[in-house]
Figure 1 (cartoon, one colour):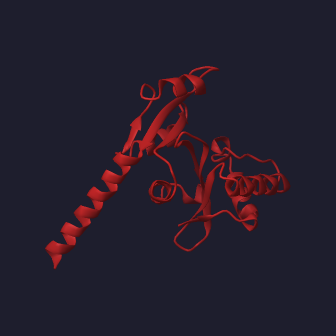
Figure 2: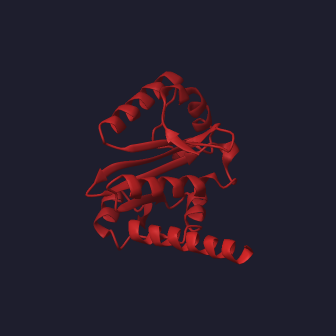
Figure 3: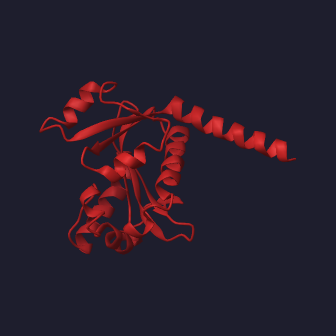
Length: 185
């Protein structure tokens, strides 16, 4: 479902990213495959330097579906950027990828908060974020950051995934699954 980026992923990701319903929401935009290969190499190098954490999202058959990244990491807090190719919209990969990524970030890295900024006009992402009970609106919780990202106009809403709240959610779900298994036994 998630794995580290590889330069060989460039062609497939570029094709998925180029779709008109996906491209406007991609952080690492490129107009040509050569430009995208340069972007990929830069992202791989940045991860090796500890500047970001980046994964590709794959479907159930190992085909590339999109990317998920944590960037601008400061004070144990970073920004999330995720996109899925059009053929993978509405299939549950967004939720699965986020939860796997959050789990990796909280268990294997020194991350406490994951910030998500969403354009107020991005209806698809706003609807998607509401499906996560552990993601909180953060315009007032991180007011300074909210003001910073909206310096040039009120374009974004800010959300946060707090480590403790997420881990409680995951443990609650695990406890419920174990209870169901015990009742079936």
